[in-house]
Length: 314
Length: 316
Image (cartoon, rainbow over the protein chains, first blue to last red):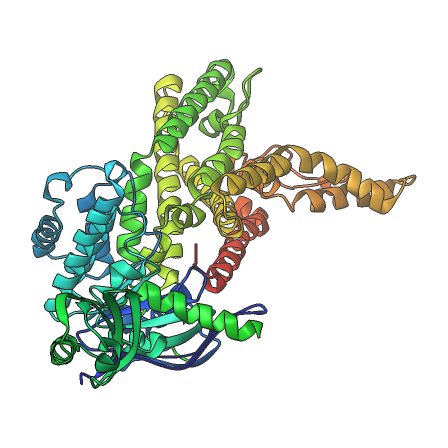
């Protein structure tokens, strides 16, 4: 297991009477993409601002790359790049000028910065609009300009706050692939989003936020088995007598339900397709089809909160 | 708890960018044209009026700035009126503009402190104002030489430079105020309106209010010493306004014959050489309080803006 690059203990932030973040224990490991997932107002952005030293925590400890952002904000911000959720640029300036300003604020003034800017913009597919005013950029181009800024800064950690909001599905997909490319270069990525299905594809681990607390965390599969009691579901099309009983004997199988006369739903904590088929054939059944379905985060999330609210109601 | 690193890291880039942006902005160009036309108009009219009396005055050149001819006010009055407008228009959206564009979070996430951002913005706007004022001063002086056919003397140049410096301090007060408003109000339009409102209030209404306020405080003045007291009180109240301080300071600096501000008794004029000019250093010591007040007002407002900015949550 890789060493954690971000670690918080009992982190809390209070705005007046409202507790925006409540006792957060977060750990992001080196080289992984960690997803902070949750609805708007659940404390994701506040957490990010505290990690960067842009907001003072009310309580708790933070370590970013072994540094406390309250005491050493400059060192932290030198190593961590941040793409805010409502990212803005100086609209009257060109993409090149905007990046040049960032580079200078980072203390980079030498001539090789220009080449770096061009390289970063070209990599994000912005080579043609490099000298156009940012006001003419589309939403997707602006987000990619933000990634170009991160590429230019080459930080240890990139923090992206709701980067896919307002992007069309193709644009979001493209954007997330670029994020994945950054990960492959060794960057650790902390990504916040409320688009669960988009994000689950690229996150190594996720943490689900609700009202300032991280209520669940782990890999998507782990969460699925925690919340839904099963991390995979198999739809088996087969006909035969006593099939249900035979399927239940397969190790790892949780629940077996009949969806129709010849279609069975089997929930299991691992991939049990071969074992199911073998058991069905041994029971003398005819197999027509096997499909496995991994539950998405949407389902995990919806189910978790349904059970929470049900628990609160009773 | 000590902060690491220097608060000035990044000051240079912020200053450079802000200065470049303002140099190219449409609002600055409009103001420059407006001020230039008004100033040249005022100086031209003054020079026409002065031609008749020029040989009689040892400080003819300075009168170019202070002579008024109906319906145009003097160059100095123009500056007293327009400098706040320029300062407010340079500073009213300094921070809330960044907030509403969404650039504030991104810039502050760079390895700099907030100090550098605020200071860089203030200094860039002040440098911009200085640039405009120096340009204006050179143009009017050159114009004066051309029209009057006489070069300014050493002391006149000195007084002219002091006048320039005072104007810059005066601009600093309004700039700090505009910066403060850009922090207190989230909408740039709101901070612009409040900034202009304060400007109008202090430039036009406050001198009138100060009279009535002094009357209200002292009550009806039946005796002469009470009237003097009332007049002095009115002057003190009027001096709350930076416009009054600036007008007084400039009046003394540009008129070497002015020896006192506020009421003067006949007894004090006994054996005084009325109308004879004061040396530059005496004029300066006469307006030293006004000068310090303008400078410290500017510093105080900036410090206030600084504290507000440090404590501000930057969430949009």
